[in-house]
Image 1 (cartoon, helix red, strand yellow):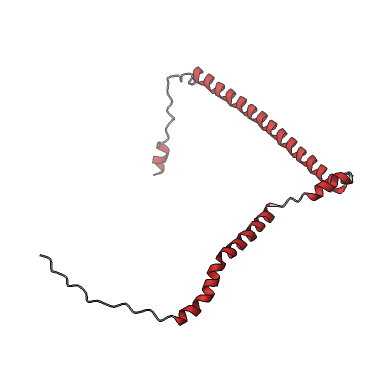
Image 2 (image 1 turned 135 degrees about the horizontal axis):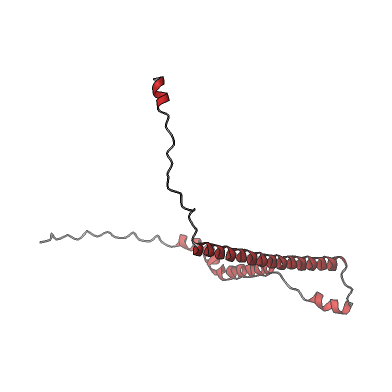
Length: 152
C-alpha cells in the first residue's frame, strides 16, 4: 500500500491558454449607480435640513410657552395694582363654570319632574283606599272550545 501512495503523486493541471483580462464592468451601469448614490446623498442632506428647521421651530415654540408661563407666574406673584373703580364692576359679574351650570340645570329638571309627577304620586297614595270599597272584579266566563272540522 505504501507503493500506491507514492505512485499517486500528480502534478496540477494548468491551462496553456492565457487568461483574458478581468471582466470589464458595464460603464452605463456604473454611471447609473453613481447617479443613484448622488441622488440619495442629496435627499439625505435635504431631509437633515428639514429636520433641523423643524427642531428650530419646536425649540422656539417651547421657548415661547416657557416665557408665557413665566409671565403668568409673575402676574400671580405680583398682581398689577388697578383702580378700585375698575375692579368693582368685574366683581359683579358672576361667571359660572360649565359644571356649575350643569348642576343647576339638573336641579331644575328634577324639580320640574317632581312638579309634573305630583298628581300621579297623589293618585297612588289615594288609590288603595278606593279599591277596598269597590267590589272585586268578576272572573271571566270560560266558553266551550269550538269544534275543529277535519280537512278534506
